[in-house]
Image (cartoon, rainbow, N blue to C red; front, side, top):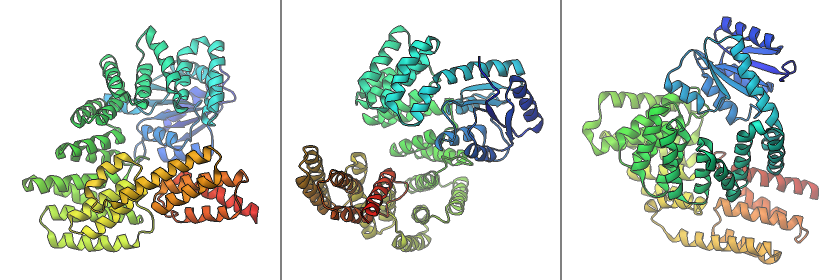
Length: 542
């Protein structure tokens, strides 16, 4: 039996009368601690300040964030516990809305109107299950994956009725630990009995992790055939198709997913990128346009949508000047204005926008106006004091090359390659735009020294390891990953008592050399943690 007297609830509802009715229902069920907010923004603030056990959210909340955007932001910011119950409520029941809402994984969905008995039954089932599995969720939330696995085994015996849910959690935890074979054995056991969507998708994920692309493709196609509303299978299938160089098939797969669920920004952006690589600019323009539209009030709104939309329009017009309809030009002008207004305080965004605008003007034959944008872009670039993420650097280099600024473009692409030479996918895209290929040899040399240093460290040959890492940085002084690897090993050497205190000063010097790393870079968190640790050791020395 679920005890509601100690639970707290949040109602997110813009219709005051229905919100009061919901609170009365919850009070009758036994929940006395009930808060009400009438906007998505207020809901986000409330969840930052208080941890709720139950959240009931309407989908349509008037102006501002809708219920789907609230849920995706709560997940993104870890503002909702794994054991909390989130129920989406709405009078709208279109397929696009329902699928968009369900993709953000609410625990349930209730169509208005519903009564107390329906709400009670739904809450009883969900709360009982969440309470039973709470120990697993708690360990997963804390990153204690071994403890979570132990709890899975214990709770399988205690709660056989939740066997499927526990097996799913156990397999997902094993995947997080990269124990793919163990996860696959669970999926195999489940699928031996009957086809279950989560197990089929989980098995495909494990196959992908082991680079078994063809096996994963076969399984994902089977999943889609049996369960056509399992949208995750389409996303994974398109990933596999791109891995085996089938971009046209990947575009078709994404189109099928979007027909069923068009309200997911990430999928629209991915479709835009794949369509652009396939030279299908009408499709890429439409996909990026949809991602801009869906971005209103979403945590997943990104400047990339605007830039990629504008670049697709520019290439489309450049290839076919008759394609420049008044509507397309008016829409692009509108989106560029929105972009500048939205990101006016971000120097890198202003630089990206100016280069994109320059190419847009050039595609229309407006050479003088494009030249003004080019000069502005060069001036902006001279003021940038953060490292450009690799793909941003590549985008700018391509844009500036097209605008005739070969020297600046080469400078940008060389920096991007040096910072990211270990990223094979990035290199594949960047190399055609790089004139000076000599930095690649230095990068390969640095990579060999880096690997050798790690091996020597594992063998406890600390002096030789340190020497290797120092030489690796000499060979590639701008590579972020090598600098981070070097600092991490040097700190371990210091903590082992096998180096003098000057090694910490060296670590700080290395980290300072990349302190302009962008917060958007996937390595930024690791950089911040190593810098924090270095400074803690310095304070202890003082």
